[in-house]
Amino acid sequence: EEEGRGSVNSDDDGIHEETHGGYAPLLGETNVWQAICTMEFWLVFTATTIIAGSGLAVINNVAQIVEALNGGKKDSSTTGVFVTIIASGSASGRLAVGAIASAFKSKRQKWQILLCISAMLMTAACCFLGWMSQLGSLYATCLVVGIAFGMLWALVVPLLLDLYGMCELAAIYSAVNFAPMLGSLCIATYIFGTFYDIEKRHQGKADSSDEACIGIQCFQTGFMILSGLGIFAIACTYLLYCRCYAACRGEFSILLQYQNNQQQRDDEVKEVEVVVGEDDR
Image (cartoon, rainbow, N blue to C red):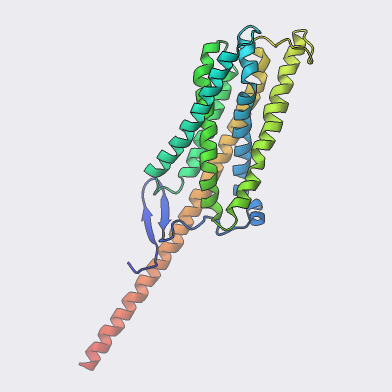
């Protein structure tokens, strides 16, 4: 193959273009304002807001969850264990993304798929948290929350790089970083905190008192809402995958057509050279 020309590979799992400089951005080299005007940006932003907000809802309120499931008794040591489990899960999620990316580096759609998996894990964890009544069930759930939360932050940068290129990657990433702030404010603080306070008042306890809300009902409604938002995040990631896969197929078709046309031109040149050679003889 001529030097400088990319190669095209096609398999059952995806279609991708390889060049000496790596992948060309799916949406071209894009500045931050152009990126904000694309649907792909808002799909990533929405999914990140929901996943990060749900994770922060658990992380910020794990002490209250432990207290509610422990009959209103504070247990700092148990809370510390759950925080450690979440941190360990986060590290494991980041490592898992790196390992999967290395194993499937030829698959261009891996970032969208991993984002969808992160949303699925967080949604499943929130759904389970809304129905568990035993403190022991929190161990595995905190691990899943940590894995999903860690996966998110390990794949956002390469996902944005694949979509928009290096031109203004830092600025685009900074714009996406408003998502966890919005998620923390709207989901972790407003939604989760509001329903916790409502149930606390139903139990005859003032919002300003140090008395804890007791029972699964203290956070059940909040986590059910988070589960619904998680389903919406899964839909966003799936739509992102579909749009990016279609873009990859478009790249493949255009490049394949170019190579076919180039091959036809080369064949025509060879035929002309053969005819000229015969005339010279």
